[in-house]
Image 1 (tube, helix red, strand yellow):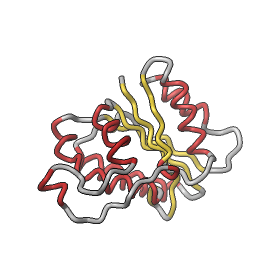
Image 2 (image 1 turned 60 degrees about the horizontal axis):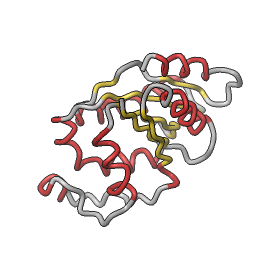
Image 3 (image 1 turned 45 degrees about the vertical axis):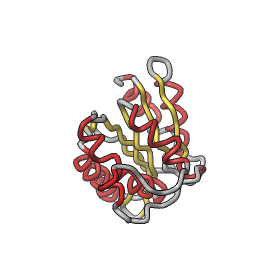
Image 4 (image 1 turned 135 degrees about the horizontal axis):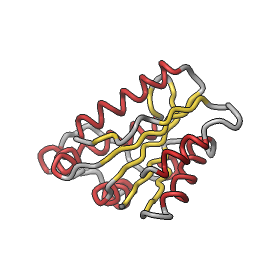
Length: 171
């Protein structure tokens, strides 16, 4: 199984650590690759909608068109790992999601599975709001979420890692 892990974190904290642990554990049985979105040159979507007519993104080659898009197209499972800010996924994650508009038809014909890891310094309701943003995206893209999301409240020492290591074993 080919797995893409999208790390939407702006720093090397909980989400980054989860992404690395997921890659390490999943590569024991599958082929997993992490994309650290914040470290990549990804041009923001300009909302031109040419991708709906032309079925391809007209933005000049960047890391999305040259690396991420082909990986997403060939993936069986996409892991969305993101911190939560103001009840939403990170700006890096939202920007990447916006660029995938050109894959809507492709994903409908070639369904993908999704797995969500959210972390934030907030309450459970805020985390659920961020998850709902991703669920709406999955519905639009025809993706199937394979399990309940892993939701962690940041800065809780010793908590969480066991949850996601166990969840990853089931993939």
